[in-house]
Length: 380
Ligand SMILES: Cc1ncc(COP(=O)(O)O)c(C=O)c1O
Image 1 (cartoon, rainbow, N blue to C red):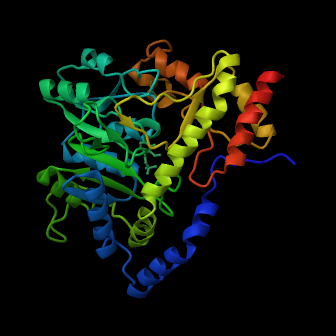
Image 2: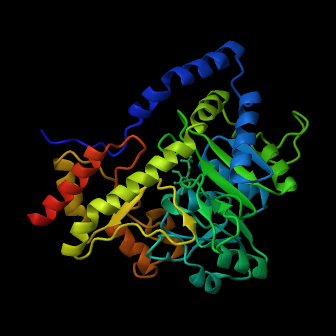
Image 3: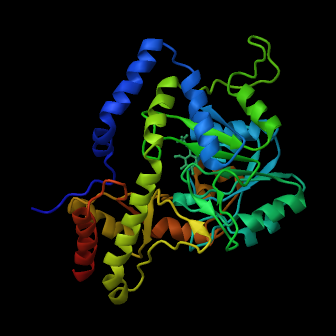
């Protein structure tokens, strides 16, 4: 019988921590405290320490982390914000929801992250911020972006939703900097399939700036201080105690799980070696020398992507496509006037990327099955 490989499998992981999670939940149920509270505070302190920032603010989702960061910076109607179009919708959606305009900058085709060399030319007198996305768990090339932001007096928000624990270390011998720590604010998602996943929606903003930290903290609860007196117009984006309790349990395993993901990535690299020498047009993920890649996703590139994906599905191998249509070509952004061909690397990536199963519990047999089936496709 052929080995089936689901694209991800949260149940196996849950089994390994079931008792701990249940006892953490019991504690929450006993206290009947469901919103914010000591568990959320403990998680905030844990994530701040892990990211090397002064503070962290728990919010309801990664999307809200972006929205609240932009709100805290005062980004609003008519402002422009630079960001890559090859990302999850929330990166741009948060900008649009404030009446600001996303200005799309093409990606580096090797890393799928925003290309700093194409950023400067997109800056106008209305530009207020840049949002690099650390896609798939690898940091964008931050130093040139930080330089541009400084020179042009722009804010920098890291969309680190996929990159908790990723590091950027462009100069050997110096300490690496953690994702989220480098910009004015960093945004994380704890969506269930993320490397650190909640049992529902959850997110976090990290920052070193005390004034921004305070502002995000107020904005996540309707801007009130003291209660029922409103300094700013915020939203309801408080982090649930239940999610924080679960995340605190899972956090203890994050480094171990990240190590497992990195080992799976290395194993894929070895398993693919033979195929790469015989088939043209397959590319494995590029890890730039300066990066600690945490392999939230393992994304290969192939020319006949859709046919391969269909074949793999028939063979019981789960895959996914991040992302099938870059944001500048989405229907909702038609009024911005972009055309196919405007951002060619993002467009080409959308046609060729294929995410393979990668999670800490993925077995060697399963990885062999994935690569074997891909080999079988090319033998056909
Ligand atoms: C790059 C990126 N940005 C933002 C988000 C939004 O996070 P959430 O789903 O927690 O709202 C995600 C999550 O899917 C993401 O991958």
